[in-house]
Amino acid sequence: MVFGFISYRTNSIKKENKILENKVSERTKELAEKNRDITASIEYAKRIQEAILPAQQMIFSKIKNAFILYQPKDIVSGDFYWFGEKNNYKIIAVVDCTGHGVPGAFMSMIGHNLLNQIVSEKGFYEPGAILNELHKGVQAALKQGSNAVNTNDGMDVSLMALNTETRECLWAGAFRSLIIINSDGEFEKIDGNKYPVGGAQLDSERKFTTHKRQLNKNDSLYMFTDGYADQFGGDKGKKFMVKNFN
Image 1 (cartoon, rainbow, N blue to C red):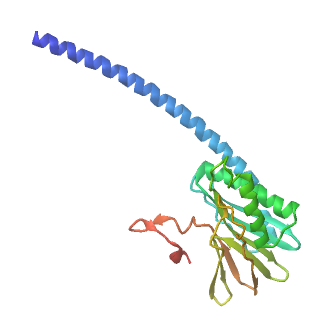
Image 2: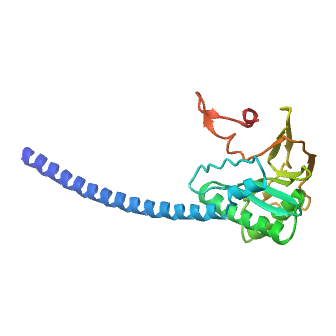
Image 3: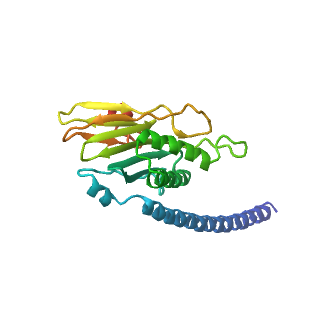
């Protein structure tokens, strides 16, 4: 009787395990299919996002000796760059949107369209004024400050208007900096305003400052997000940090 009972229990457990294995296999297959569908959808979104970015060769034809390092952490990115021209100024923006991946990519589409409207349609070219308009546009697009929607999403921006003939540089930043290294190798860092573009706070005092510099031949200018400085690595796997980046 003991042997029969043990045999019965063993067979029952084997049947239950087999049923569970089949269920797990089916569930794994379903999850794999859903994951493929989601990944394929995001990969397609990447193609759309890359299509709206300005062509690098077009930028390089307008600004000699320029370079762009763009390596998104996820399939789609919350960081993007933008280029436009107005009143003999080449206008370049480097933007870091709230969030990574899909949420950041949604914000990047909003930022890209707003910059097109502000510069190409409304005719703004002075960086501080562009950021002021961008701030208003983000708040309006996301209904920030209203009771209906509660979102504090925004953007950190470095934006430059460069006259390549006169070498006049106009720049403004929202939580970002501009680095200038002159022909003698001297380092200068210009800090932007200590608040972002967008956000739920409806403050009328948020005005972005335009900094003006007269450049010399062979001066180098760098605009960037926090992506490089936030990389983990080295023997101890620590963040690179802004100080080391500078």
